[in-house]
Image (cartoon, rainbow, N blue to C red; front, side, top):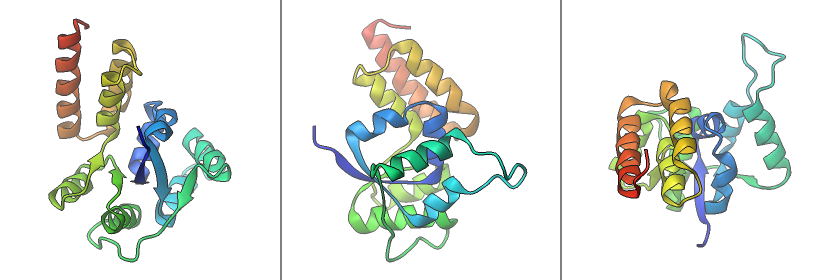
Length: 170
């Protein structure tokens, strides 16, 4: 399968790290990141400015290796914050996949015909593709559930459970 170009938004990166699925991402996508997303991912925590989080270190490492490419849109979607606005604009301009986890931006993207995937949907896809076991996928879904929109989680869990039932798992 040929890799698809995709634009990543901050929420996907942070939750993809929490769900431990970022390493699988590059098997399927060539990932582009707007500078606004890069700045959000690498921004210091105002409460703990000396702290460096694992998702930040992984971003720096992959950027340094040329795995993540910085690309900016010519126009942003003004109704969203900087990272979302830039990612949505770039995905629309290029016709690329959008990797996003924020419900409002996801809904807007899909209403405008963009191909978008959330971390929860990606986990289900990895299970469907036999890259994750039932237990691993379930654990990953549970890990991201507290910080993922309820509609996104419900749809992903339903798809996961239906697939697991058809396989005779769970």
